[in-house]
Length: 133
Image (tube, rainbow, N blue to C red; front, side, top):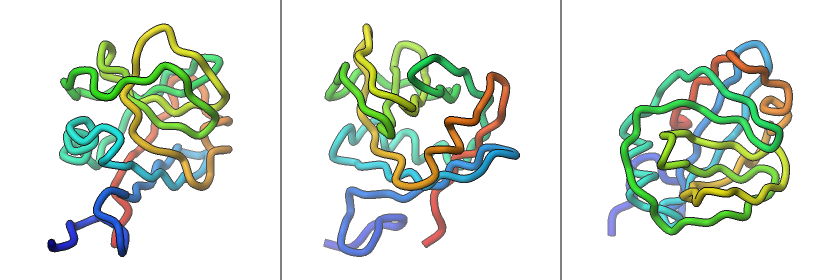
């Protein structure tokens, strides 16, 4: 089976991305197809994109135009988890442990630079792009 573009060596599931918070820093985000394949593939088709953020106590949310349903939902998340809230079309980055009232599709993890999201404020702009190979 041929390796797919954007996958790291030895893995067709892991896709490395960069999330740049203007004026605050950059984070390395790993998306995993096996967690929610339809959602991850739909998100990859929209990359790169810029989004204003919404900040809640436990997470930072990026607004998207994605229209996908609930897929392999979870409600419990830890610091660094990345998930998709289908009902709001939001990519959520958890900055602390949380139990969600709504199911979210797990997408991956922030591998490095999570402190860039700790520093975000409502209205900041984040650019999410696939990491160049």
